Amino acid sequence: MRLALDIFTALAVAGGAFFFLAGTVGLLRFRDTLTRLHALTKADNLGLGLVTLGLLPLVAWPLGALKLISVWLFVQLSGAIATQLIARLVRREDPQA
Amino acid sequence: MVSFLLAAAIFILAMVALGLFRVFCGPTDVDRMMAVQLLGTGGSAVLLLLAVAVEIPAIVDVALMLALLAAFAAVTFVTSASGSPAAAEDATDSR
Image (cartoon, rainbow over all chains, first blue to last red; front, side, top):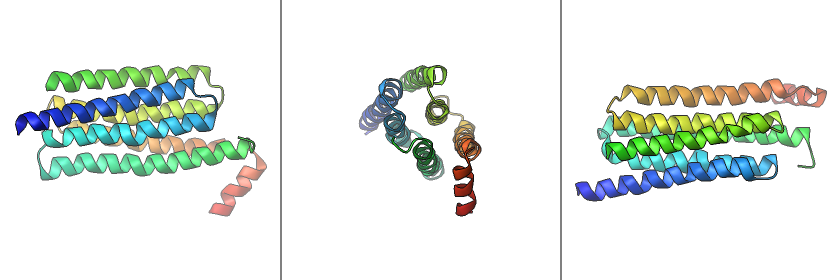
């Protein structure tokens, strides 16, 4: 059981790290601002989500796990709002984008 | 497991640091702000990994703080970047 949970943690954390890699590569390589914003949200949602998921078996069960999940939910909420605001700003400054 | 978590934290930190290269080369302020958003999220992930690896639960609060500051930074940037008259009108409409 312990081994299975460790493997689960390793896979999920490695997946999260991969999505941070993808977010960085997208942020550096994509052509225009809106596609770079798209790459950024991948790192925001999946990267942090998978890291949090992988850490869940390692923390104290009800309270520690709930706290990790609440950090992730907060980042989801604020990230969604921030990217909407930024995309609206891009659209307003350059309607052709 | 502890060393794996620390290695993952260092890897994510390196990725975020590479992403900060976007702050240098722009080309617009929006791109610079997006790199800072990535720093907020990636920093939170690094701090969560660190909190579990060294077993200090208080670091989770620091991660929460970093996410909160990134959210405030984004909102402040968008509200202060609306310099054109049309944007100001938009802002008063939505209030």
